[in-house]
Image (cartoon, rainbow, N blue to C red):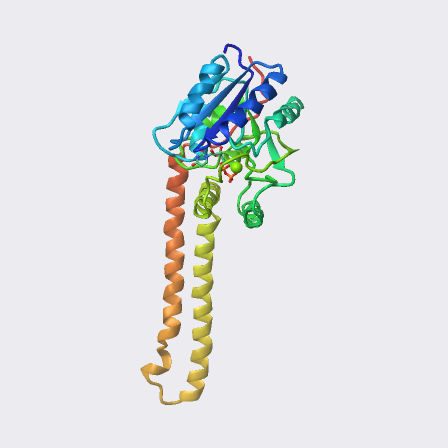
Length: 315
Ligand code: UDP
Ligand code: MG
């Protein structure tokens, strides 16, 4: 496997029903590209026969196949990282093991890269998923578009091509839970998108429960935005300010009504005071969150910036 040009990274979790069909289509599609390639399967702690099937496939095509076996289930994105850390190609393509991303579309991504793009994301045409997932995923795309700097049409599409530089940079990051397409976007110099076909799952069922999808989206939001924290602080400030205004209005009214015999009860209003304190507390929670957010950014060890070029005289 010297001189590998293209690495294909595939996370596999309980896909025994679909793996034979995947291999039957994947290898001919890659052979047709006539470029030296390798396929890296990462078995994400499957509890079915996936690992055994991958071993068989490795024995069939050891020249172009590598298999990484996890001891337990760490999640799709961690599995992809394991592939990234071991792949050798100048270009790296990720795809799902369930044939929802047709391997025949890989050529399209590479063509787009030939035009000078270092990151090409797929956009699923006619997505073949349950309607509720399509609706929720469109909503999350919209939220992400607003609260992060990441601009992608279809964040959920895992059929994507990355340059070696981007994969290298991702490998340098020391974060535990992440969202690869977004991370890659933040390192891309010249990202592009292409429309790719999408098929129904060839076999088996989705490995993501709705709860799993919520967690995945939390990885995305907390990994790439501090806006949720800032919203908290902002809300706290608004509550505190409104309660002060309310207090002033209520006091003015009482001063007129109770005059001239003022008592403590004239100036004391527990309800308003409570709102004021809740506002302060929310602000404080957000403030603590800001510090936690900064610690989180620090421990991730993402590069602070990437230089595209430096213009300077060498002498
Ligand atoms: N996957 C994984 N680990 C997990 C969940 C999923 O490696 O914990 C793999 C799975 O085998 C498949 C890909 O990630 O290759 C996408 O999963 P799936 O097709 O179930 O997700 P969906 O298409 O429903 O979003
Ligand atoms: Mg799928």
